[in-house]
Length: 320
Image 1 (cartoon, rainbow, N blue to C red):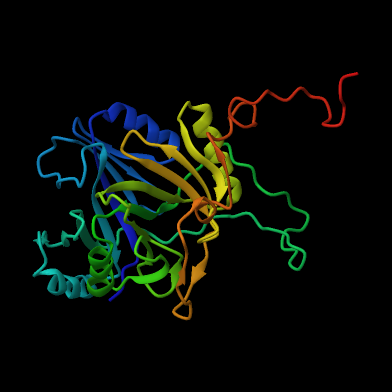
Image 2 (cartoon, helix red, strand yellow):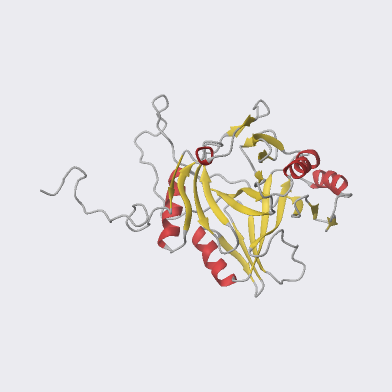
């Protein structure tokens, strides 16, 4: 049995109109809409649900809304779902909805599993020319007016008990540790072979439960930039980015989300196998970001926020 990644996330929020515009600008497609719920889809069918906070049946949050209320993971078939049905049956908050089973993880989050609804897709991505590999020949790299996320790639939570929560995901669900902040954070991938992390659990010095961010995978570095510039032009606030994580190697851009905490565009994370040996790091600014722009880039001037617009002069053409 192995999980295939995140199939669906559900937020609880009060301002559905603002959330609707945000996720449309983010690049998701609006699949369904009622007075109490918005359902968006990514390119491969991963679903993002935003529900009114008082919607009946919505799982309890680990912190006040707006925040993430539920995460649904995918498996390949009904046989693997049955394995998890048995494995989770004695866990706190166990639910069996037939097509979906789950429980409450040690941090208080509603964890669910279903046969994946995502579909395999192939997208055209930028080729990168390095000194050794010249794969892009007679072809310019793409430039994107906006992003169209492929899927929800990973989620980061603040946890009250790192050891207990990490053990649950490893022992019950087969997650594998990729890297660690010893005693403070675990980067976990949901299968031995895959991207650097699907889940990052972080315990603060004053431990609390909550959402840090939800991350959306895009095609390539140019789409991170194109998506971020579009969000900036739409008036949404950058938290940090663009930038690069030294742990995972990914290029990122974080925005403040009306559905709770932050959302991230990211690409080019490390691909790992069971041969990978987890590394230990000490938390700090340079471990989070090799480099990053605070406040983002203005989508109109294409310069750092609050910087002067370009004048049209060459950089070395100084006034006399």
